[in-house]
Length: 119
Image (spheres, one colour):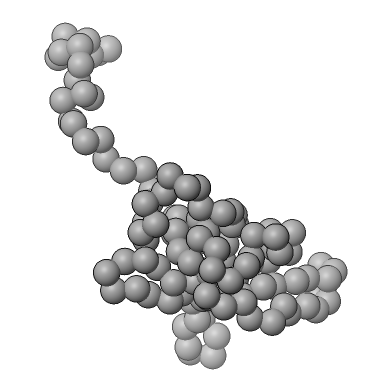
């Protein structure tokens, strides 16, 4: 999924050592630009952390996955970014959640007519 939002807060960098070596995690708070803005906490792990992009006030395009896990009967949800980049100047600035959008004109799917079916 993808989200376009403004960076409003950078939480302290977390570091540690696990069984796979050293790790780093940066949590950021972004705000959507919708009619009713929402704030979202997003985690960025390891080499995906780019300090030059993470500046308060920057408009960001964030590609992320949402994952939930259970621990001691309680559920926890993480929003993990796998790509963070500055939003382009051509973006409309609003919140967008995108997968592949449907075509605007379904008639374009059948341009050649019904006789072009391969079976």
